[in-house]
Image 1 (cartoon, one colour):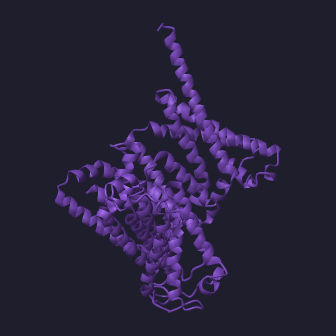
Image 2: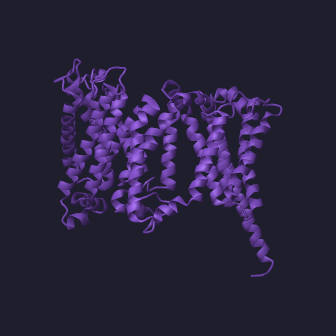
Image 3: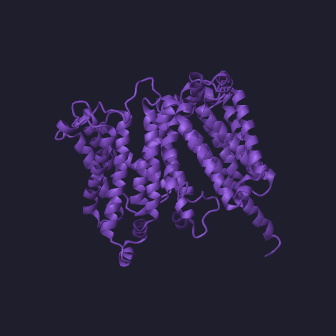
Length: 576
């Protein structure tokens, strides 16, 4: 190679690198423009994270600028100055998209075809300045600064970068929970602490004092964790002290879980009860899908069978049959769901892959149509449903266990038992047969696995867990309606299993918390709920297809024998 060719090669690489930076800026610009025109920024701006400082809508734009600058560092030529310049360029380009939108709004009535292009949006983007005079520069300046900060974050040492990200995460989470914490502390018997709640928590979001306090506490906790080398010390501990420490931590977590309704109120109790409900159904689908590899999109059918069976046996209304206590009716609901599991399993034993998903989806739709039909209306109530279902424990309105609190404890206890049962099943001979079927049915049959028996048991047990979830639902709501049982329930349960990690019991729990618990914080933005739901699924499939807490087998299938170094811990079965 000649000497003159070397600079040419270097220049070509630099040119390609800056083209990559520009492409990142264009993508970030498209994202911020989308956030504005679909209404996310103006609507989410009604939810403050830090009072009078930043809202959830503004944070969505800032995070996009920061993320663009962070990603640009990997595309830019080497060197900290080039990285900062690349981040600033990405922020400038993405901000220019918003500046162009502002200028366009001064010449064209955008609301005629973009209803969310409101004066409130442009006032937010220009920070109250005149869009036609100097306000259109604001997004470009903010984008430039945000992109440069994102690039600076990427260039920080690992510990410093982790500290900044941890502080941002803590501010967002506490900002979302602040209103709930304030309301609970002011309405409960917390003594002098309640008076200080006003200084830390606003009616919505944190106060400035609360934000500074959050940063201080989070930073001290992180510095203590890293400075004392807690993780390294824990790994170097002898087996017996480590076991004792694990027991102590487990007892503390258990005590915190028991006190959650008292600390968080009935809203938290109801939310956790819904999480436990989906954990039950997720563990059931984890048997059929995660263990046996049988995709069941009609899972809502077993959920409906369990719910309606318990409702018919316990209701004191027009459609009640026996007026049994909730506890006495639950076994009948579980058995009825198991029978329907066999009814579904036997005809489709020879079906595999996509055809199996379509067949089970059809079964779920059949059950949904039947409970809405006029044929079964005299027995199931049709669209008006079944009401007057008593709770598991009869209480007065002023009792602590009144309402969703008792379902909280019931659902958690049952979910813990089912998780233990699933863990034992996985380690059993039947569990190993399911895993063999998931890998290859033909090889499993050649090795002596009874496919008919194993598949039928998988459907039966999965249906039983779903029926138990339906029983908990009617105890929580006190009524049951056909509109509750649609395909969205089956999709949610399947997403819980996939996002958590197929075949992983802790993964189901984590998936239920992420997909069922966190969206409850955004109930006032319900029209965007499925948008973010889809974004989470896309992110998972692209960057972590094995799930948030994968099993060893799932991680090995996705990443080879060693797996990614950032993987979460194994579940208890595989760790042993």
